[in-house]
Length: 179
Image 1 (cartoon, rainbow, N blue to C red):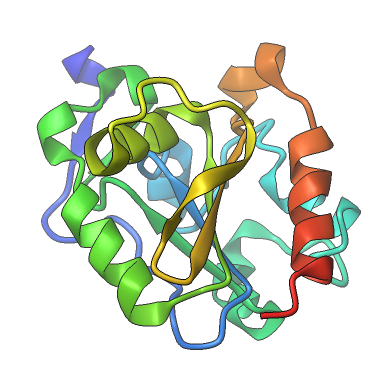
Image 2 (tube, rainbow, N blue to C red; image 1 turned 120 degrees about the vertical axis):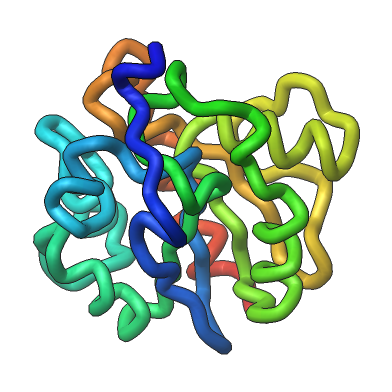
């Protein structure tokens, strides 16, 4: 599995974070194709960008290279592991930074922290709250004022688990949440 892993000095991609965000999406780590492209969710078959448009979080389908424009839509991006890229199966658990993610979310206080996939959600919720296997959707746990959602991964490698219903539930929550 090590052949799938790319080690990078510092962050593979910069976070898109700031005050007043509606939602921050958090993946496991940047995929190999995204690392090569220098843009989030750039892998072939990744559903992230079309899903954001389809559920109404962006006015049009953005290209991966436009990831910084998400802040203007009230959307942020980060990863549980900022220093490695590659598929989930190749990531070293020691590289996951639960404390770092928690600090970022507590500092920026988005309305929602949304995990793009069960792996980052399971690691974070397991270490932070002792939850072994979170289900999809809104969680009962919160991180400060931020609600937590677990979403099916948009990765092309996760197609067999794809269900956009939790993504629509997130969009509905963001519209109805008056915080």
